[in-house]
Length: 169
Ligand code: SF4
Image 1 (cartoon, rainbow, N blue to C red):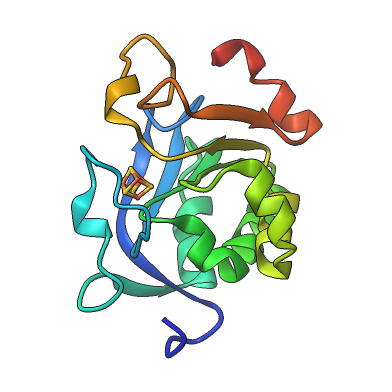
Image 2 (image 1 turned 90 degrees about the vertical axis):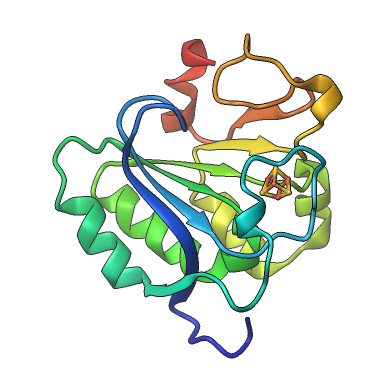
């Protein structure tokens, strides 16, 4: 991944008007590459770090997001979005300026992300309103919880904007 330009994200797929990946109508970016290998993962095609995915620039994705007036938020899912944290943080910043909220799924635990003191990870957290953390655990699978696959996954409302959606989870 170090061979792709810094403002380019390796994208596994896009869902331009999702109502299942967070509150409201959301533009979802599924990133390519995941180190977690959760048993029962629904997106195994996103695991590979090479040979798959489409490189897209921050500006390219942003143009598509703002072109749709129905979209109220963006979601970064995977794959593992933190592996693309630098360019995703810049995309998130542009979306915030445009009034959209930002939600991120990660297989890492929130405490580990903070402890890592990785500037790109911190930059993405600073632009994240709602964070869903932790791997998918098949034994904890539940259809009764909103916007999460398994009960171990936690929701963090990291901004005032994010807290507005507490009753949706
Ligand atoms: S973190 Fe997500 S994409 Fe990665 S293996 Fe787990 S469920 Fe699949």
